[in-house]
Image (cartoon, rainbow, N blue to C red; front, side, top):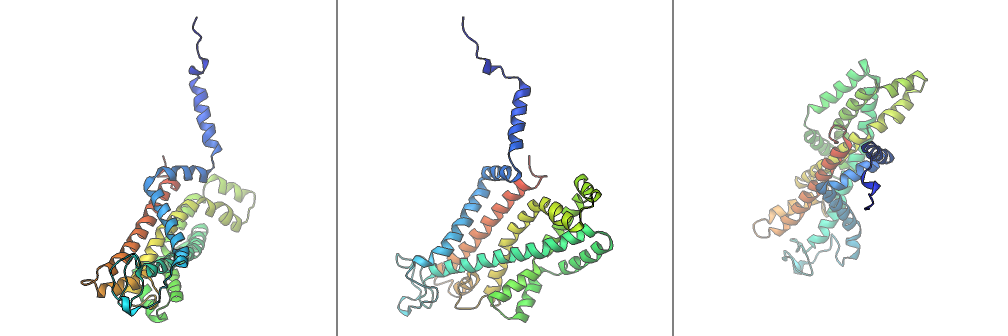
Amino acid sequence: MKMINKDLFVPLEREILQVQKKEETLGYWQDAWIRLKKNKMALLGLIIIVFLIVVAIFGPIFSSHTYDEQNLMMTNSSPSWEHWFGTDNLGRDIFIRVLYGARISLAIGIVASLLNLFIGVIYGGIAGFCGGKIDRIMMNIVDILYSVPTLLYVILLMVILKPGLINIFIALGIGYWLQMARIVRGQILSMKEQEFILAARTIDVSKKRILFRHLLPNAMGAIIVTMTLAIPDAIFTEAFLSFIGLGVSAPMASWGVLASEGVNNLRAYPFQLFFPAVAISVTMLAFNFLGDGLRDVLDPKMRR
């Protein structure tokens, strides 16, 4: 008589319990990483970002050229094995200058996002947690600042502070925290009346501990997404400022500086504009792909 395999007749309840148990063993961030890996565009963006960071840091070390080395015998040379992206009107290697530009642009994007995190999270967290009159006053200030285009007062600050890398950090740090403050404030308002916060107040937990140990960690998903999407915005702003002469000044090799120099020779030597423009576009797309993917996996409303 043929034997029946008992494993084929597993009760449905047991299968459901096994799936639930498996999901419970995964932490929030482990589950988010698994979901992120399934998003091909977000994973592609992450790979491109890591590749750009590694190449920007280590690429110039292995090159025989420097970003400010001039060779007047090789001015405006087309791309070749010696100069992969060609040379500019002073004979400088465009490939190395693009790599140095990646250092500057990525550093500006990351520093601006960290300042955005520090100022926006604290400001929005205090406004949302205190509520009432304090919240209204603080958010009215944000609304007044938000009514002025961010790029406009960044330009005004750069005119006052004069062009320079440190001044770009200051200008972007002052202007790019408003959106973060609004998002954090909204997250805090939606959570501060929930049961676990009311329980913490019942046992006389300090307000500072409730804000920094309970509310802000639970808003971290929205904070990370906002930070990621702010980086390409800061990179583009820096490139625009350098393009119009208010950002990084020569001979430093920002992508905006390279684009500005390439525009002057666009008709005769279009490759001088093409490579820095592609670098800006690819970097912004990569961060936007990653930001959209993080929003899908970290935002409870977007998760399935």
